Image 1 (cartoon, rainbow, N blue to C red):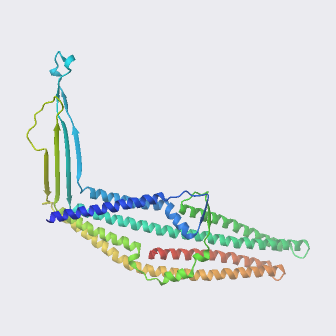
Image 2: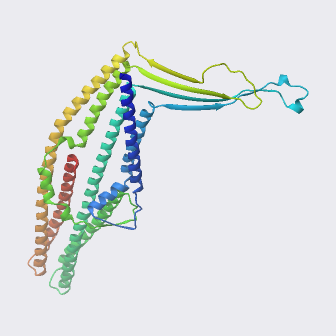
Image 3: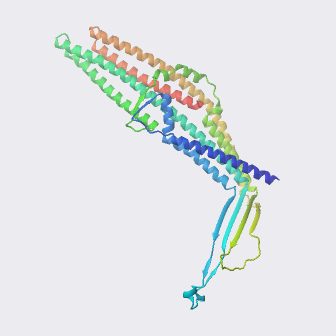
Amino acid sequence: MKKTVFLITALALSINMMAEDHVLAATHGSRRDERLEAPDTLTLSLAEAQNYAIKQNRSLKNASLAVQEAYAARWQTIAAMLPQVDGTIGKTIMYDDSLRVKTVDVFGPPMSMSPWTFNAQVAIGFNGQGIVGALLKSIAIDMKKLSLEQSESQLRGNVMSMYVSVLALQSISNILDSSLVNIQGLEAMTQKAVEAGASEQTAADQIRVRVNNLKNSINAQQRSIVLAYNSLKVLLDVPVETTLVLTEDMAAILSPERVITLLSENFAIENNLNYQLLQKQVEIAKANVHLAGWAYGPTVSAYGQYTKRVYGKGETGFEMMSSPYTVGLTVSVPIWSSGKRAAGVIEKQIALEEAKNTLSETTDNLQIQYRQLCFNLTNAYETYVTEKENKAVSERIFASSTNKFKYGAASNLELTNASNDLLNANSAYIQAILSLVNAQVELENFLNN
């Protein structure tokens, strides 16, 4: 009775897993078909860019294929416990040259004919290790899915970081262009004053140096923008010739409300993907203990065979009176292995304790890491607010110094210092933006948002 229940359970598990495999194959098959041809111009908001990357990125596609591979590996384990059917068909013709006679040209060479033989075999064998092996494959599938989810989360965060980097660099480039226009106007005005004898050539030369420095900064900024666009294209997996148009406003992405929401969320450790992966490691260690224990269990094998012989016209043969059906059942029980199986169980039990210790240690570390990430986000946001204000102040000072210089109320040195302060403030502002985005992405990935 116990054997029957065990067999029914195994078959039910196999059928359920087989249905899951077909569903997953259909799902991932449609997902592969979602890959799109990149147009010449691609207009994307942040959310659209993230979704586009999910569909297109080849690294993520490989992670998806790894899930399908794990399903196929599990089905191989299950199929090994299901009935295996083989069939053969054959006929033997024996030629004996010693029986040749003079009438060979008329009747042909003498031959001995055998009947056609049809043979079908059905075999099935299973044990506890096979069932546990299938469960291990199921845990491996869950781990592959978690890795896929982790890859998707990281890709979304990377796209967000690069998207904001492009917007920030473009914003600073616009400011530098505006500053260059103002400085060039001052240069032209000063040069006229020199020609009229109202100013010295040194003043015009100093402004000319400032103009050249700004041009160099603008050129470097443009190269940085091109590099950022190319990095974003890599994440989106589009050709370098594709033109990207980003429609999102940076102010909408860098939302104080989003930061406050993140910092106010309660940390549910069970949602953390790293924690979930370690839990699966513990489950695998437990299953390995059971797998090693089932080495003491029996292996049940059953087989059936059907054989039929068919004689052709004019053929004769003699066949022993026997049934064409053969059925057999074998139960194999391990008896003695000189302690090999016992050592295997002990080894897996020790590995289970190690996995549990790692999970406990990681649980404590994740709590500390959460507090650190919250601190990093708080600090990054405060720095961003400060640098944003500093940039605005530097812009006002530069505009005021420019107006004063027009009317002779400010020197070249004051104008140069104001220009340098503006460039430094813009640089610090860019760094603050990137630090804020990175801190936000890290916390979102940690919380699995």
